[in-house]
Amino acid sequence: MYKMSSKPLISAKEIEERLDSLAAEIKPCGFDVVVPLLSGSFIFAADLCRRIASPELQVSFIRASSYGNSTQSSGQLQISGLEKLDIKGKKILLVDDILDTGITLSKVRETLKACGPSEIRTCVLLDKSARRTVEFNADFVGFSIENKFVVGYGLDYAENYRTYPEIWTLEEDYG
Ligand code: IMP
Ligand code: MG
Image 1 (cartoon, protein in one colour):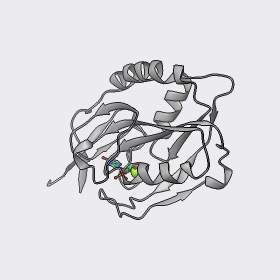
Image 2 (image 1 turned 120 degrees about the vertical axis):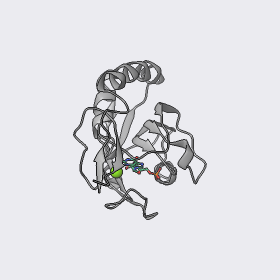
Image 3 (image 1 turned 60 degrees about the vertical axis):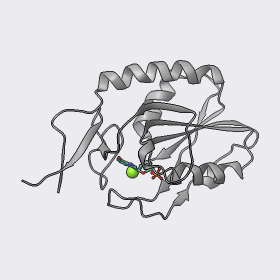
């Protein structure tokens, strides 16, 4: 069994402040389409998009699932929503909640490249670089964190904990 840590690893206020500075870096790049990976990035992407708003900025969601109900990746990746994606010749910002082994983002980026965008850059809220198994660096990183399983602000464990406004560590509960 798991339980949430007694206090957040990253508070809602810290997230908001970092979003402001991230948005200040990202907005001048003039992306055409933000592509958030569901479900984990839904809160992060929504908060980021509001800060980089412009009339022509589009948002197009895709889903990449690999985790199942576990804290370890199954290694199998399913990508859906590609049929509705119109990114040919466009400047894309691919957004995910967390960069862990790197498998998800590297596979998704390769898949999106095949759709012919003019440019793909990547943005993650969290980066657990200690866990990387494939070489991958995101262009924009909110916070670098230690090798701990985290939940909240969109991140789940077995679909739970997503709705918290902060990031929490999940700890084993021996009680
Ligand atoms: P990767 O393919 O190993 O880089 O894993 C990326 C995906 O795994 C993310 O989009 C998350 O959905 C999930 N993930 C990795 N680490 C965590 C974590 O600490 N908490 C919640 N989900 C995680
Ligand atoms: Mg997940």
